[in-house]
Length: 279
Image 1 (cartoon, rainbow, N blue to C red):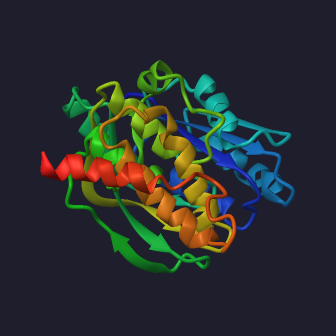
Image 2 (cartoon, rainbow, N blue to C red):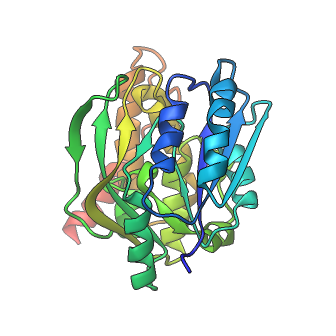
C-alpha cells in the first residue's frame, strides 16, 4: 500500500496560474494523494477557476478538501492546512508554481528508503509568466547544516519540499509572525537535529514574475532580519546579521537615518572578526 501524501496549495489572487498548478498535481505518477486547497481571500477569479477543476480532482485524488474564506495570511493558511492533512508525508506548493510528473513518486521512494531523513528537496526550473523555461537550478550539495542554513548558504527550494507530516507538527508548524516562513521552518527543523536532504533532479517549476515577494529586495531583507532574531546566541549570528544589514543599507540608504531598521554595529563586528581570525 502506498503511503498517503498530502499536497497543499495555498491560493491568493492567482487566477491566471492556479489551474496549471492543480493540473501539475493531477498529472503526478504517484497515485495515493490527498489534495488540500485553501483560498486565502482572493479578490480575483481564483475561486471560480478552482471550482471549475474540482470535479476532475475528485475523480483523481484519494481525498480533496477545498475552502475559501477571508484573508488570514500565508502562515495561518499553511497551519490550517497542516491541521487537515492525513498523509504520512506532506508537500506545499504555491498556486503559481508547478510540479513535474515524477516529483511525488521520486521523493516518496527516497524517504521510504532513507528512514533517517526527515525531509527531502530537489532541483527546479525557473519559468516566466508565460510558463517558458528560463533555466535550471541544480545544487551540488546533498545536505546542509544548521549553520549553513542560518548563513543563508543553502539551496533548498521551498516548492520542492516533502516532509514527514509529524515533524512539521512536532516543531509547532509555521510561525505566523514570519513572512519568510520557509527559511524559519528550515532553521527550526535543523536546530532540532532533523535531517534534510537534496536530490539533484529537477522536480518543480518556479515562476518568476513582478508580483513575487522575492522581487522586493528591501522588504525581503527586513523580513530576513526578523527570522534570525531567535538565534542571537548562535556563534555565526553576527556574520548573517552583518550580511543582512548591508542589504538593508543598500536598498534603503539615506544621508540621514541610514540606521532606520537595525543599527549597524561596526565596532561589534570588528571585535568579532578580530577574535574569529586571530585566535
